[in-house]
Length: 257
Image 1 (cartoon, helix red, strand yellow):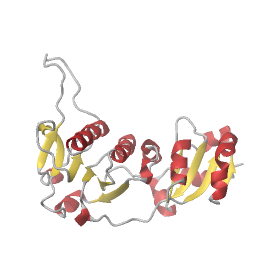
Image 2: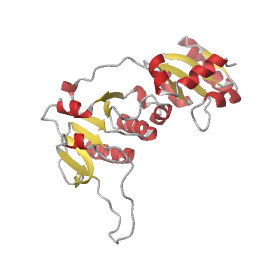
Image 3: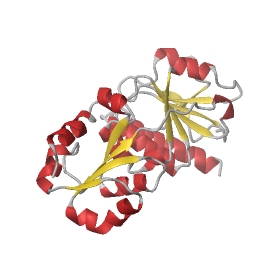
Image 4: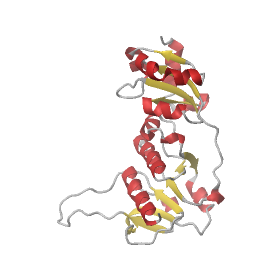
C-alpha cells in the first residue's frame, strides 16, 4: 500500500524543479523499467502490480531494489501516463559527464530548442537505432527527464548520452574540419549532395526551425525533398522534427556504410 509521503514524492518528480532537487526521475512501463534495471542506472524504488512482480520480482530481489506491490487504483493515482502501466520506477539521475568536444569521430545530433517531449524521446530512440551515441541539446530544449520524454525513448535513454549546452558557444568550439549540416526547407537536396561520414546534424525547433544565432554556424544547409504533386493544391508544410531526424540519419548511414 502506498503512503501519503510516497504519493507526494512521486508526484513531485513530475516537475523539473523537484527532479533537480532530488536527482531522481520516473520511468513507467514494463519494457522501459526492465531496460533500466539491466543498465548502470541506479533504481531507488519500484511500484508494481502483483502480476508484474510475479514475473519480474526475482530481478528486484537479486539487485536488492526496494519494491512495493500496489493496486490498479493506486497506480492510477501516481501514473504520469494517460493509460497506467503495470510498473513505475524511481531512478537516480546519473552524474553529469563532460562531453569530449575534441573527440567527435562519428555523427553527432544537435537539437535547437526542441519543445515537444515526444519528439525528444523519439529522437533519442532514433539515435540509438542509427548508432549515434550522443545528442547535444540547446538550453531551452525540453528536459530529458520529463516523464513523457523518458517514456518515448522506450529504453534508449540508457544507451544514448544527452547533454545541454549554449549552442552558439558549443558549435564555435567544434573543429572547423567537421561539417555542420543544418536542416532547412530551402537547403540542398540531401539525396544529391556529398555527406561526410563524420559530422553534426542540426535539427531546429518544431515551430521556428534553427534559431538565427545558430544559423551562422551551419556549413551545409540540407533539406528533405517533398514528392507531393505540383498541382497547386495544399500539401504538408513540413515534417515532424523526429521524422525529419530519422530520414536524415538514415541517409547518412546508407551513404556511409
